[in-house]
Image (cartoon, rainbow, N blue to C red):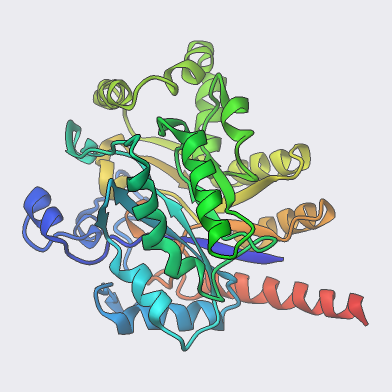
Length: 379
């Protein structure tokens, strides 16, 4: 079994973020300013030894790779931000590729949403995600990523580089885009692209979208949160699959209206895990599971946040082992983890002041155990 963690790159400054949010802004600003919503609420989160690192420093990325490899993580799934040729937050992914001192696998998720000020309850668009019909733009995008795909460490399935799309339903020319990239990949000696869709909620036409993909990752805890909301509201259960297919601009406005009326909501960590394992028992390949180390987006949303209660390395260890056994029984050998370093959503494997290396110890112990079982089975 291999464990692969999503990787969030917004811990280095960019001119755009400084202009939009204040000079020198990174997500650490949000993490440091978070306030607990009640007694016992674990905020603010603090990295071990106050390691508020700068991902523009290649040595920091090298440290992360070394730490992940030491604790048995299979690799990273990097969030990639591309807006019709404009790159954002690309430095950590490029530094990881250029560092030849590690053997970690990796792949890429195109986080293809429009950027707004929703964190502060403002629907203003900061960076619009457009989907050009111009194939030359598609080729430019592919060519930028080609050096990653050609890296021997880049994750491939049957000689196809794995490429994920966070919200595939938003792409105006999805089928043409996929066909184009498959052809470009073949011209470079690959068998095509191994396309993976990220699924966070139900959609009315999801079958027509997911049929274009080789696999689907159920993204936690968003799948669980949406399931819980649907159980609490029949109206939401009926409306959500339809609303998710509206143009993104309308979805942004609706999200703003919803947020102005929302309040902090807590969910039980062990209930999340029961839902994940039940889904895993029901889902057949090529559906892949993801898990949440923890979740609390109070740093971003304050009194409008969603957060889990009861997360700990002990619960994480027991439940991840159960899920691993379920997935192995189906022939799946990959589980995605949310996340390596999503500090502003309190979803991170990296060591913090409270649990230190506790979550990483879980990954190390399970990776070693299942590696030994695999080797024993081959003898």
